[in-house]
Length: 441
Ligand code: UGA
Image 1 (cartoon, rainbow, N blue to C red):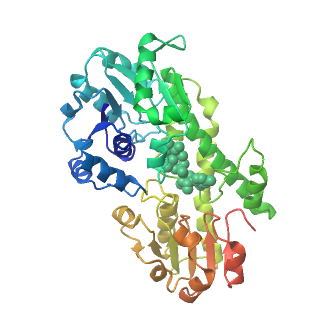
Image 2 (cartoon, rainbow, N blue to C red):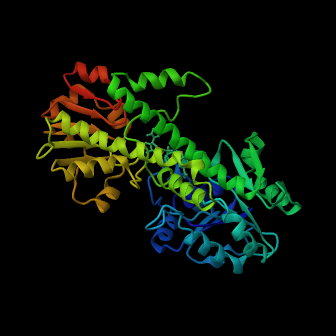
């Protein structure tokens, strides 16, 4: 099928390449000329395992191209919209400027029977507002939220755990136009549909809410365990053992119960804030008032990591060499948007520490935003003469591949702070280190 993808950021670039990889003819459209030039050469504009390969293959096969020219959308049957919805400057609500511009830009090139499939994360009520503009051209708007995780984006797009289509509905039931639109999306995602991946057809509001409530739930899970970490810290309990124990209950599950310096990235923090803002607008602020607490717990954990470093270094980090292992908001990513790791590094720098920071993928991005830190590519080089080491992104390079004995030959001090509870505390202690975890004795 011929598809267009408007917006070639994280979501759109991966979506375009993944759709070409399953056999569609895809044109990716973005206003950023540099991004389009890079993508057209088959260069992934960010670190994402597997993306480079499917980009190169797609372009070589002739099924994938990128342009800044919106008219290239003409002739496609389905037009995906995957532009960003950042947090508004000066507020918590989502900024929908790009979504509106993408839809308006597409309108002249839509023909009767086309599908416009919104993938961006939007406040509930957006699709119903946009639908009349799309219908006026004879096309149909559907909302088809995206659940990909950075680091697993290609796999999550090609083989998602569920597909959701919010379609035109009447009293909660899809209209004939809605059914037809859902069928076309089933064709687009045919490998997943044939495999039996759940394909949920619903109304616009439900589809929009599925997305934000999924992220709100994940954020809640993380802040829940981090709240338990705070209690563990004053009682001598160990939050990792606690998480293992409650995680055995299938109703709870162990995933996303990793206590540490909390969540960041381009989605969870902004999505829970936008959700709160939207709920307020709807007069239901109290229904998600707990999300403010989720946010507050999350941010407190960064303070905690900084306090641990200060205490461990005898009450001040001033003029102390601190090696920060990690800058990305999570491993397998070069994304530093709202990165707790980088935030901790910047705060330590602000307290007068000499911060040396390393990361397998995110140095370039981090340096652009925080040039004041000392960036070192080589992990061992970064560890040299450290008074304290703090692990803030759980890359395998630090979690599995760094032996405490080896680290001890490089560092000056023997203080390690495990901001992600990802190190084997016993082996670090055995190698002579003073180990400090988050919510662990
Ligand atoms: C998140 C969701 O997981 C995706 O399903 C969703 O599609 C995406 O947002 C989005 O809305 O686009 P992502 O931002 O890639 O994906 O990152 P996550 O894997 O969810 O991690 C978010 C943050 O939580 C990271 O900073 C991570 O370190 C932290 N985290 C995660 C914890 O602190 N503890 C955990 O146990 C798990």
